[in-house]
Picture 1: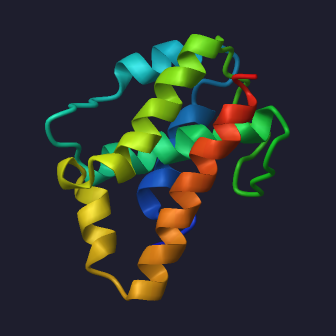
Picture 2 (picture 1 turned 45 degrees about the vertical axis):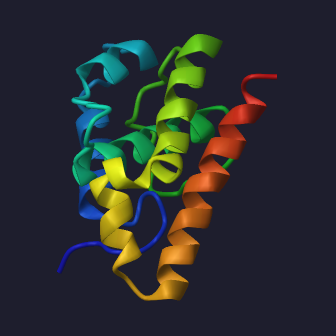
Length: 136
């Protein structure tokens, strides 16, 4: 049975993405490079891409010791980043809620139980807010 929950790392796509990042161990990729590799399309964003963006935020917040995520292992390399990279990531996360009609993940959660949807939405908003700490 797959992983499922409202947390940003409580789904198979996010956990697979963490595994993908573990393969970079020793290569030290940058946040900018990872963002460039993602297939982010502002017109309509696939749920897997949004799940990976949320997981990427968790990785950055974990490495900067702002929020600890136990699912992120020591095998995930440090992702060097600039404030501009963080700003791009934060804007993509804020877009999930602000432009919900363009995000499959939002639409899928909107169909869930109201309590679960509200928990997930709060998690997304909390990630964006936590990234703001890195922009100060």
